[in-house]
Length: 313
Image (cartoon, rainbow, N blue to C red; front, side):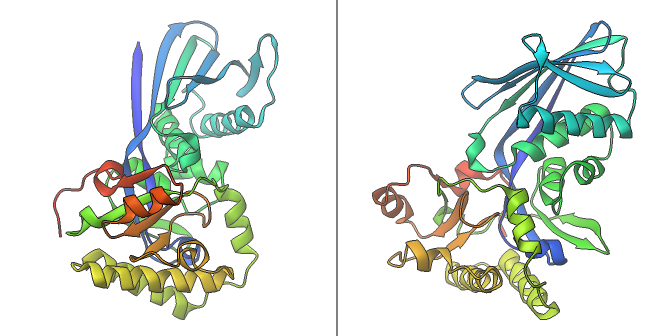
């Protein structure tokens, strides 16, 4: 028997960092994601894991041996202790705690995961993996995430919904609603890969050491997020992006991205996700030409990046 699973990647348009303190965040699914195929065979609890990158190249290839609800990773006959394997071992063992029988000693498993985007894009290689494993084990994906990592969990919600969401944490509990978000000016929105992938867990840890954002600041971000959702004019959208960027920059004590690197750009530029490394959002049709001249090779349109919503607002 073979079972297939797929989860979409994610982008956080508003509320980065502050979502940890209860701010509303606008998150959208990307077209590209991660698939996982599980082949169930007669056996004794062995699990062979193959991970492929977006070009189909194998970057992980090893086996787990199930022993008393623990998974022993073996590669080439020896214990495998690479960081990636230990992270995966932790996720799978946490899944076994939530559902002890989804891997059992009467079955062997051949698992193949395939990313559709480069790992350094920061679109959610971990969140899509957790979502797929949760679908396989039939467990609560957000519970598995909270048992395995630290973070807001918005990326898990996106992977489960595959639609834009308005996400927040209320009384330490994730809360979200699906929305229809596809701005009228989406043909003037571009995603530029900055080429310096950030470790989200490390950036979250740094943020949590800073002074906690005030209620007033969170309310400002909430207002900006709501206005962005309903915005129909590009000029207003750009003003909102710039305001959001300045608020987060002040909290992080980092100059806004446009001030640091792109002062002469005609449109607005907003950092996305963990600041400084993955993608930024740029407005105006001259984005392609401008960023290409600056040496940035990955510049995607809204249509190329974002999984389409139902209709435009």
